[in-house]
Image (cartoon, rainbow, N blue to C red; front, side, top):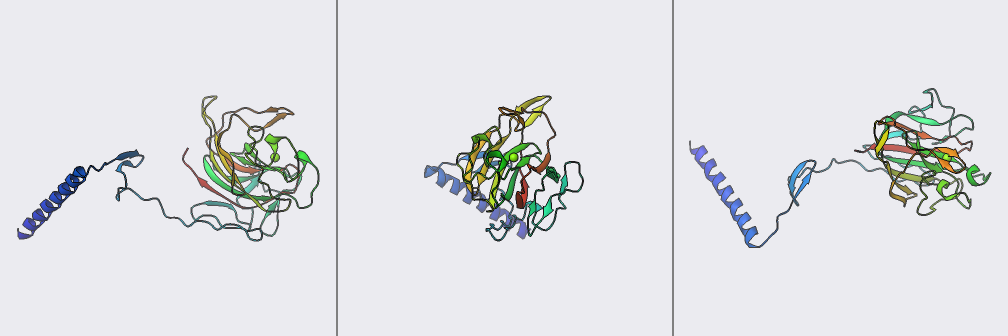
Length: 271
Ligand code: MG
């Protein structure tokens, strides 16, 4: 009984203290603002608001050593093997492994991830051939495809003129990068891509895809709305949106040039 009385007394004191605090805040003219979020209604600077998950960030790459993925990423390629990859028919890819990288083999076709993704953050590193051959679209051509179909161009665009909407880091045929941040042939380069998938209703696109892309750490697409597909339809024509599944593979293009890739990882995002 005595314990109960003490508890009641403590509760009353806490409530009174709370009232006093609120009253003091009101007297001081403090503003109390609330915000609606997907975890509920929260007071600004509310200590009870859920904190985000703690993860271990990755390690940056150098030219000599590939970096490491963040702890919550799906690692698609860490330089040790092609177990996460197939050819476009689900069979073993003919792309070859080198010391910590994979390399495109002419005529072998695209290589694609076994796992499928929709909206995501994607990190990819690539190197165009150090032995410079060809020009324009014929030099160090490959490509990173989201959902197996939306291409961010990979090309040797270091002193290599081509059409602007098809140079390195272009959303092929759709968007010119803000700057040309290319490194030289044979150098390792990176793409950090934030992609939100398109959403279809029946045969219509009701929400177009968006891309934010960093090329070697430099923003080259700043939340760009992709107006349609990126498939080559002719010298001066590009594909339109066509309805597809909610998830698709990450694909890398065989355009006949021995482009190399390393350190590929993905983090899924909400649409
Ligand atoms: Mg290409």
